[in-house]
Image 1 (cartoon, helix red, strand yellow):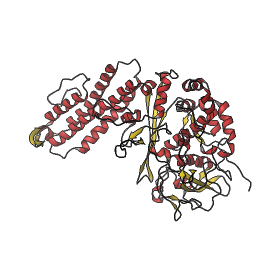
Image 2 (tube, rainbow, N blue to C red):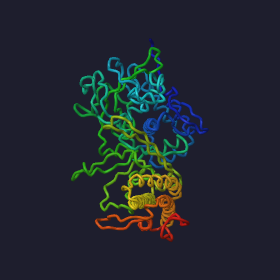
Image 3 (cartoon, rainbow, N blue to C red):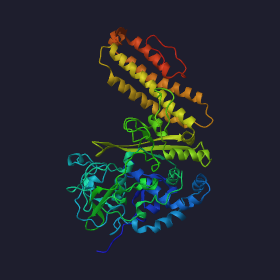
Image 4 (cartoon, one colour):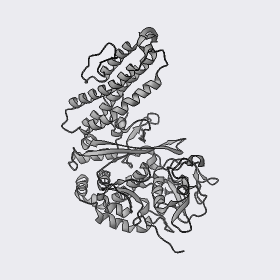
Length: 557
């Protein structure tokens, strides 16, 4: 049967939402041509969206490489792109035309992001490709993909999951592809996560896909010729790509990081060639996540005390935090240590994300207005069981003025505000524990956890609104005081609820042992301890008269 191409440059396979709010699909070329009319990519899951965004970014980086290198100023070159009503199609279209055949999903010799001509390797099962489809049949009973949706995929959906697999595939044992010298007994043993799975991927969001792509087009240095994506390189075979004999290839820059072929994949089609019914998923090119800030612009970097040695600092990508909302993790994301709260006397070295440094450069060189609201989104996967399964996917966004990305003084103000909130919640947890002790109950961990969750839930929208108002001319002391008053009010409301529901036993109180000494603890003394802790946590908040017991008619705190 003659070859029937499915070329991703022309076929509609990327799910988007346009400026009118309508969901539709576009081709790779269509995404660039219509980027100014598309709101964002909106596919099957958030990690798939960011994997596809990074694919588009890789194309854009390579398209503008030569003209960017010829410019006198990378930030001013960026400003010229940003000021144009559309993306530079005069550069993008000729670039993609050079590699048109390499974007054919079904090409007999060079299928897109796959190994060609392998029909003999063991099948892995579609559940290995589809991140939101559980591995085991019993769990699939509760999946929306039960039945036909789990048995085969359209070429469009398979293409989306293919890009996602290279970026976020879990570690663990893979299928040993025929011809992979590393395979033993038909198995490929773990080489690590897909590259993006190591990271909490930080992206700046614009009002259109065009703006989002340009905000994330980090041009801190000229785009290296060696930093070539897979469609510019020789087609991969089942074995790992080598620099030279015995030396595995490693990413040469951000373009390769965004498109790194961590897996070797063969998609198996039905007789019609229109649906994917299975795949073989093997190991591809391993890459260590240590000290890779020079090739990954879209994550922050955490210092490893354990692995660092004299003369060699070790940094790992800052992964997604499964226990904290985005606003509470700003210190790590912005790579700024708070100067209040639990201050580290010897703060560890930090490496900021390249995207943060880039927005800073755009603002400093007046290519981007400091007052512009630039939402920051962090997306990532949470893995379990030795990184062999995806347990959760998180994607959160917070609206930040460009000045907070760029101005370290304002960024520190935001980070300190988070620290203030956390210190106040620590005081609240102490009150919950004291009330439980006064009532003769256990330590109160459950009550303290519930109170913390309630407080953070009420503080989150307040922080989002407060941080939007930070601007270069802000009176830092005044905005910090306003924030601390808001925190005192909200935390005080939760505290008041705890006290009102304390019960008779806590009101009467009892003698407890504190630091080896007996002490009488009741609701009144617990409230006094809480008020003292709150004053220490929020020194800029206007002090409120403290009732002897917070029962009737008192203010929140």
